Image 1 (cartoon, rainbow, N blue to C red):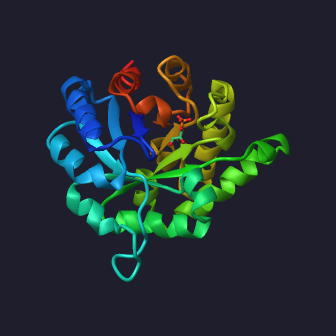
Image 2 (image 1 turned 30 degrees about the horizontal axis):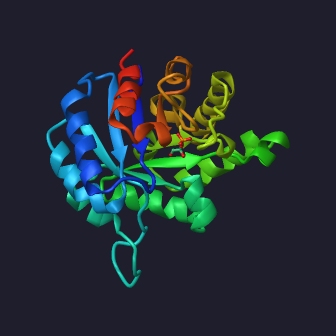
Amino acid sequence: MRKKVIAGNWKMNKVSSEANEFIDEVVEKAPTSDDVEAIVCAPFPFLASLAEKTKGTTVKIGAQNMHFEDSGAFTGEVSPGMLSDLGVTHVVIGHSERREHFAETDETVNKKTHAAFNHKLTPIVCVGETLEQREANETMNHVESQVKKAVEGLSDEQVTETIIAYEPIWAIGTGKTASSEEANEVCAHIRQVIKAITSEEIAEQVVIQYGGSVKPANIDELLAKSDIDGALVGGASVEAESYLQLVEAGTR
Ligand SMILES: O=C[C@H](O)COP(=O)(O)O
């Protein structure tokens, strides 16, 4: 059985003292079950401290973005090696907010996915359709194309380790969650796409998360679905109490 992976994405929230208080509480109270993996994806300035505080615990720290190059004249950017050197283990790649506001493309997503593996980081690759695409029945084709491009050129082993987060853009931060059936349908399609590229055995191992207005009140229903293996959570992951409830749901 695939383990549930619950990743909080704080986005651009918190100051250092709040970040440290959150992680102290989460480290103390997070369930230590093999059935669930807890990841906190925090802004760059907090990563060193959070990675230090979670060393030797079950809580993992992720970044929300990175550059694909190892080093160079890229003012303001952060390299994959800088992240892994701190003890960061995961990195969100291709979040729709980065695609929309920071010109992230399928091509840069693919480069970043390769760069993540080159530096022993696990990529959490985000895909998902706009409301217009859903209404035009383009969801499956769009998501399929995003997934194929993201994993292009990866080895089978790397595809197995890639976490894919299906996040319909219309459900992000809007309070509108995709129904568990709608979410599962797309996650199942993503698994079929992975199967077609690799094999059934690999597709069965790939962790596929749902993201978009996930909260303690709706996570159980989502996680009960056959192809939803976890959640990428924004708003409801910012407070420790709510985040811990989400992680706890992964153990049920
Ligand atoms: O990365 C997280 C997603 O954008 C979902 O955000 P949300 O839970 O606030 O809707």
